[in-house]
Image (spheres, rainbow, N blue to C red):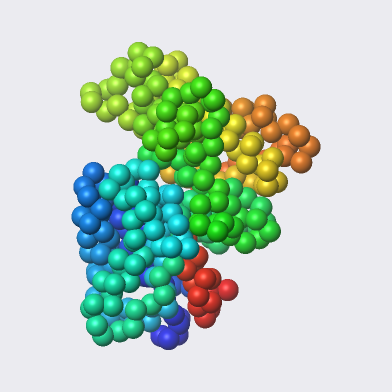
Length: 322
């Protein structure tokens, strides 16, 4: 690669970790860095952790080649104002993330501050999987992350569609159970309340599942389900049903033909995907949504960083990024 090819700095902010890297136009990640997310602390403390990641990237010799800084954050976000209100980071409500990062970089002096592009974590994952992962070749797809929360992003007409504020495709907060449990977002019966990792574990425990040791996690429920435990299998059945209902609703609105699912819960494999596909056939029955293809994500934990970089590169028209 020619030395002057522009790079993009990218930061991926989630409820448990803040990861960063410098990203090349071929998707190669270098200068990786990571900090835990102090999600239960005040907003300034969370911002300080983000700035530690940004500063670690800025200290790299190749920072001078950075054409943009992409930030993918748990949502909701408001990309037009640069603010974030992640459901799983209570200290951030309408928090001015982009202005805070921009001000900090400006105070450092030296190199010019690159353009900062904010995108929701769901659209970031969609951008990544469409560029290099399981959504390649699909002009209309939904890419999801099922983990501590449930998020998503849309590719429509062959391009990332993030909407006016950067939240389009936020499938985790579609209500699929009108009288269901209250969601942290304030609504009831959201997909996230039924299909996230913590929701799967809570349901199994409530039904009498006994975790091995203290490992009351969705991963432990998945292992029990693979071993034939009926309570564990029922918990994943319910999660698959909720995901299927949300996917079918999304497909009916925007006519997607492929769904890509990643995140920690997706690592359960067919324990999740089998009931999801089966239930999807029950919900997606109209001719124009029948036969939606469901695939596991390919990019793993790097998807948020890769997608934030891709979204930023395209927003600023970085040379060599296609």
